[in-house]
Length: 144
Image 1 (cartoon, rainbow, N blue to C red):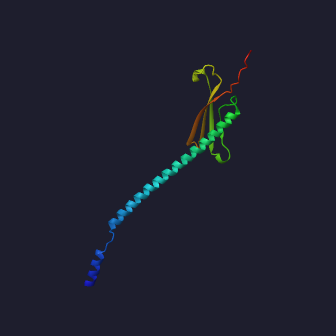
Image 2: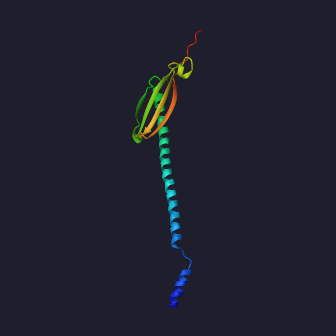
Image 3: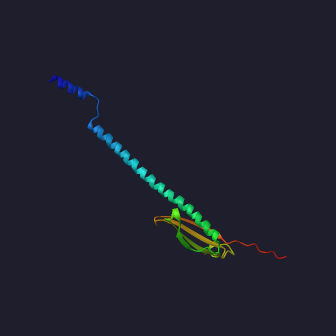
């Protein structure tokens, strides 16, 4: 019996973790994992938003260039969808002719148009850009 007691005392004197210490350590690790996973989830959503904004801004530049190439007189409100790899993206252009009262520039009637272009995807995300387009000014012939 004394041998068992000596063995039990030796076992009690060994350096070991108690159940409480193990439970506290597991709780700390669990909280760390939760914080890590939530930050990872947030970074994924930010990356998706950044990707949309990058693609939408490039598509908006492309559409504005197409509208500008079409010419001032053919610049009208319209909407459509991008092709191929960007089929889920839609665009809508609102064109408004500006007059002297809106611009404050004398003699500017019929020379300026405001283009508001919206590029969207799934009606959840939208990227808007506004620009002014001016009619080509032809030089007047000087009379002698």
